[in-house]
Every structure is written in C-alpha cells, then in structure tokens.
Length: 157
Image (cartoon, rainbow, N blue to C red; front, side):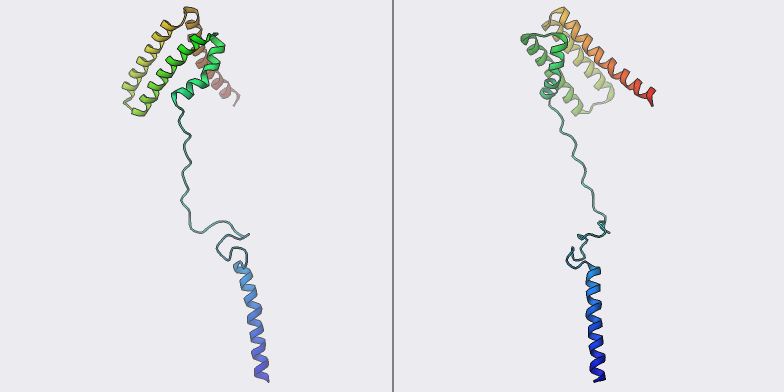
C-alpha cells in the first residue's frame, strides 16, 4: 500500500509539473515557435529586404506635372502649350538617357549644355519673344526660390 501511495504521488507530481512545462513552452499560443504573445524577436537574424526604389518618372510624366504651372505663369494658348510640351518632353528624354549612360562628369556637363542650348533655340523659334522671355524668367525664378528657401531654413536652425 505504501508503494502504491508513493507511486500515485509521483504520478500526480509529474502530471502537475508537465502542465506547468507546457504553459511555459507556449501551449496553444504558437507552440514554442515564437508566434505567441511573448517575446517577438527571433534569435536568428533575418535578412532585411531592401526597400523598393521609387519608380523613375518618364519624360512625359515629368512634363505633364510641370505644364499646368508653366501654362498658367507664361499664359500659353493651346497651340503654344503643345509646342512647349513637345520640346520639353524631347529635352527631358535626352537628359534621362544621359543619366542612364553615366558618362564622365566633363562629358555629362558638355552634353547637358548642348541639350539646354538646343532647347532654348527650339523654344525661341516656337514661341513669341515675350512668352519666351517669360518662360526663361520662370525657369530662373524657380531656381532662385529654391536657393532662398534653403538659406532661410539654415538661418532658422
């Protein structure tokens, strides 16, 4: 009888302790695989997926984004707007192709100057003089305002 009582106590102790072990291991909450409510970190480091680079805009999309501002500021009629749109699209496309080629800095600068010169000549030929001057002023003012904003931010900090 004593042996039976000792074995019964031992069996009950094993059953009670096994329930506690299961509770610690995550019984029903991820089963120890780390998906439970406990610590969420995995001991094995995972390779982070690189963030996708934003898709590069096409020349047409870039020009489409800028045209409303240009049309409003310069006061272009639909025919002049079509001329400016085609010239800008062509020059932006050339600039994109130049960036893709990744030439030496000197060659890149020379090619950019050539593209700008061609764009100016085509715009001068396609637009009336007053609207061409307004367009040039708009481009110069756009660059000046960006520089002023940067200086103001530096002064505030």
